[in-house]
Every structure is written in C-alpha cells, then in structure tokens.
Image (cartoon, rainbow, N blue to C red; front, side, top):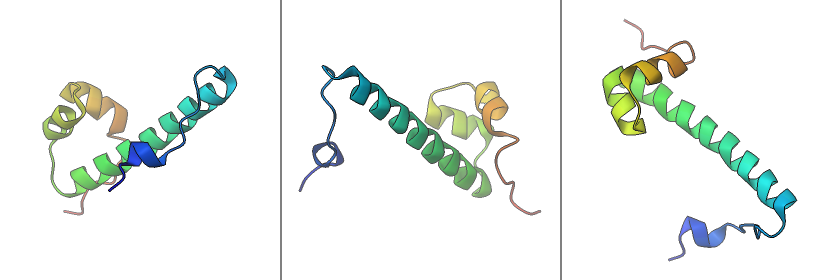
Length: 75
C-alpha cells in the first residue's frame, strides 16, 4: 500500500519557485484542515485544553486563534 507521501509529487527544492508555491499551497491546506478539525472537536465537546494539547499549543493560543471561527454546539 502506498503512503500519501509516496503519491504526492513533491517538487525538487532546486526549483525554488515550484517549491515555494507548493509550500504555500500546503500551508493553506493545513490551515483549512486544522480549522475543520477544531470545529468538529469543539462541536463534539472538546475543551480548549483538549484542542490545545492535540495541537501542541497552550489553551490560550488555541482559544485566541479559533474561538471566533468555530461553531459552538447548540445548548
């Protein structure tokens, strides 16, 4: 079975323009995935402490970055 890394065509760093374009695209994708995962986690009842631990940041950092961008579950 191929891994994801083996299926993605990673540009050669000797072509900086292509490499940087890939870095930007990957960062945007990572940001979208991170926000989506935080949104689901919060809706499932995760605390900001739980989210922060999963992301390797402080609770305050996670809350500051995402609190206004996620949908809270209906009470």
